[in-house]
Image (cartoon, rainbow, N blue to C red; front, side):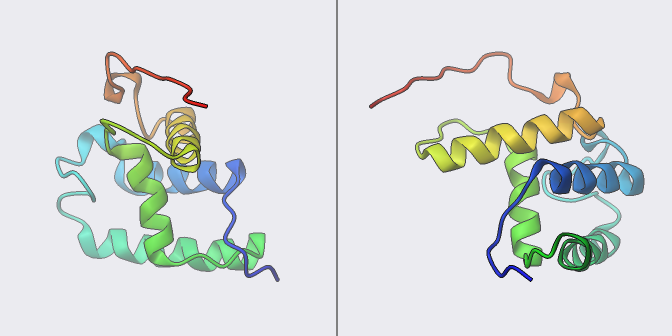
Length: 117
């Protein structure tokens, strides 16, 4: 089993699909970081995702790592400076939109991008 923490598209789609199935789309949460009335159930789901990723993907992640991936999808970023962070933002948003967890109305109206090499 790999001890390297590596997120792939399949893991992200599974994660956002489970969030949607258990708690509905993000726009219905009424709280910025977890479903408003279900914090305990949300934390249990995060723990079950950690177990699932280890068992079925051979990847060790923590609850904090799962939460971090979700944060990339649900938090609007004003500025992202590191290419790795940009990648996490794009990949998590794409998976969340693909599953229906995020709707296009959850996205910013405008984004500015640059490549400083």
